[in-house]
Length: 178
Image 1 (cartoon, rainbow, N blue to C red):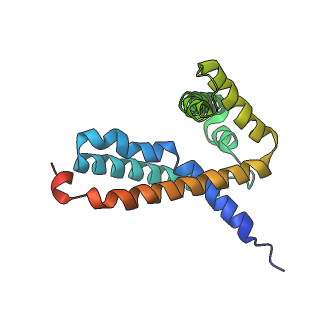
Image 2: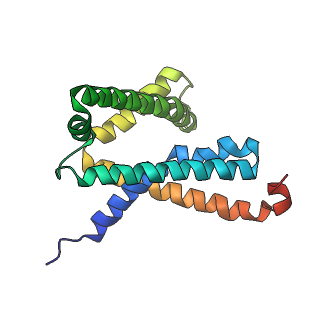
């Protein structure tokens, strides 16, 4: 009997989708729009090329490592003890930046949703609710995280498709190139 599971495959695919096509990828066009369509297209292509090359280089390094290797293991083997600690410092900084970005962006959105239930607007209430909601999801484990991620990723995909479908009629070559 095969150990392949469509549910696990879909869940894993949505996990990759949710982490790669997150707020950053959806925000790039918005942030580059002021420079014009062709400039934004060029910037997006350069970012894509950089990410692709980085991914291929990472894949090459991964193939030369033991099966259970991670970034810390790879940097330790290739860069030595000091490289390992620099990698740890970069990861701590990266995760700190993620936490700041998600809290500063997510808490006000949750506060807007809570205002429909007559919860007073206050940054500490928004932050506390955000921590309680997502901290609770993390507390309950990987299975709940996977389900919530699948729900949010499908929602993001449906929303993105709706924006493209509804906005497509307003696109014209004259507007793009001016």
